Image (tube, rainbow, N blue to C red; front, side, top):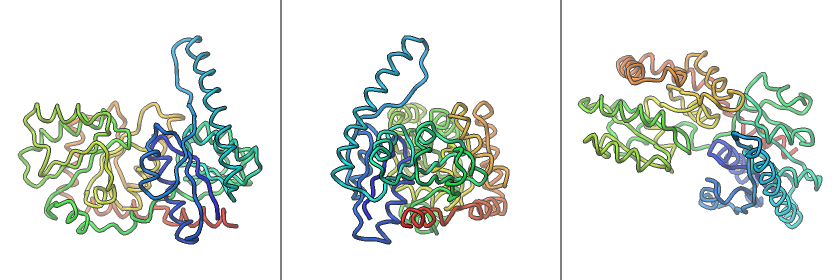
Length: 369
């Protein structure tokens, strides 16, 4: 099989595509795969490191602006950038002649799938969130199949006859994580209660601030380890603040701008503190790790709130809206779970039960058929 993936911008759009590509390669070792994305996105670094060919294309997404003039200028820039992206994508598709084009979201997916639809290549779209993104919605009409992450979304695109519930695809490495092996890899005692705080691939200032505050509050607790993913743009700022407070940045504290070995960090953790991106939540479900989930308050369609609510309602996580997210509350939840291992294990079991373990299999079968 020859496939092109259009995706990127954040890990939430990229890693599901990598999970699908991994499945295709496992089933068909001779398959040929190209990823197309932005040279400024995470994909430009991660895709080649994973062994896949990467082609960068121009693309630009819509942002909120303050004035009519700013919006007009932005619309022109977006149109020109995406036109250039479509032109380059057309050339790549004509040359490569793929059997399928798969989009997993992000503005950079738009020119790739649009070009594919123009050339009558079978196009497939996967929506990771509980609310359909703008790029995916715009391309849905001419797509061959639409894959959704949550039950009840079968009519979310407006084309229920070709919409299939699959769940979110996750890389195989997150299945059956061993806490013992992960802690051995990271050099963490099995006796510690390990909290992993992170804000996704881009980082989150709100989570960073609370993590540093909690680090200061728990500095005299010898059985605590804090794993802390700041996001690259916040790394220097966080390191400076931690050092100014006289707190350690090694030993029982691990501070990283970007985490490459995510499976070990998730695997070693007793509790995650995280945003409600679809990929993040799916990984914690597959890994069976409880969490305190803090949705971004102004995500498109408030999708992060709805992503998190399903897990919290089932009892696998605490959902805390950002305006209620504070040090006292988070400390109370951590202490409760550190002392009540039964409650922690019960939350983990709920997560495991909700995990979409066959998502990549469903998607592969549909594309192959």
